[in-house]
Amino acid sequence: MGDHQPLAIFVLSDSVGGTASNISNAALSQFPSLHCDFKIFSFIREKKQLLSILEKAEAVNALILHTFVDSVLIDTIHNYCGEHDLTCIDILNPIIREISQRTNLEPQGKPGAMHKLDENYFDRIGAMEFAVTYDDGKDPKGFLEADIVILGISRTSKTPLSIYLANQNYKVANLPLMPESEIPKELWQVDSRKIVGLTNDESILSNIRRERMISYGMNPDTPYSSTARIQKEIRYAEDLYKKLDCQIINVANKSIEETAAIIVNSFQAQ
Image 1 (cartoon, rainbow, N blue to C red):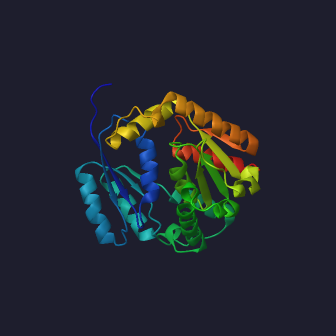
Image 2: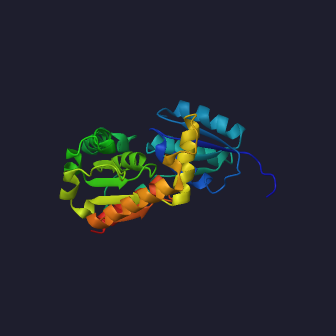
Image 3: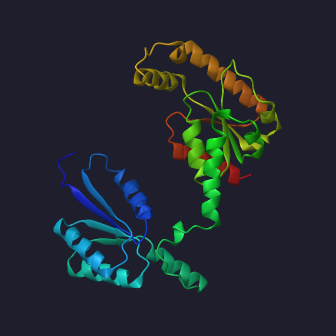
C-alpha cells in the first residue's frame, strides 16, 4: 500500500457523542494503517459554539459526522458545510425522518433522549451491580436469580463478558471452573437454557496464561500454563457442560462482542 494523507474526523453531538463515535470507529477499523486525527465535540447546544468548531474543521478539511436533532443546529451545520465544501454526514436524521413518515409520528427533537434517566437506565445500572456482586461465583444464590449464568475455566473472558451483557440489561452471574473445585448445588437448579459454558483452544489458553504470568513478573512456565493442566481443565469443563446440557461456546479468536451476540441471539431464538 502506498502513502496516504492523514484524515481528520470531527464528531459533533448535542449529547455524549457515543453514537457517531461508535459508527466512526467501526468504519475506521477497516483501515488499520490509517493515521487519523479523531476529535469528539460533545454537548453542543448553541449556534455560536457550533460555528467555532466548524471553522476548525474547515481549516483541516475534516470529515464531519453529527447526531444533532435540534433543527437550528442541523440547518447551521448543513448550510456551513455546503457553503465551504465540507463533507458532512448526518447519522440520525435520515432514520428519524423515515420512522416519522412510516408512523405519522413527530419526533420530539430532544437532545440526549437516549441517555435520559429512565427505567431502562436504572435497569442497566442494576444489571451492572448484579454482575459485580455475583462475579466469580462469590454467592451461589446469584445463579438462581440470573438471566444468564456463564461458566468457564481461567482466561475465557467470563468477567468482561458478564459486564458487557449487563450493559445490555441482562443479569449475569459467572463461575470459574477448576477440576478441584466443588460445583455449587444451586447451579443444578438453573434452567440449562440459561447456562453458557465457555471454552478455548489449548494453544491460545497457554499463550494467554504465560503472558499473564510474565505481566506479574513471574516465571511463565508454571503448572497454570502447562499443556497437561490446560487439557485437564478443558476436559473437566466440557464434561460438566454435557452433564448440564448447556450451550457451549469456544471463545478462541472471538471478541467479547461476538460472543455476547451469540448468547443473546440464542436467547432470543428460544
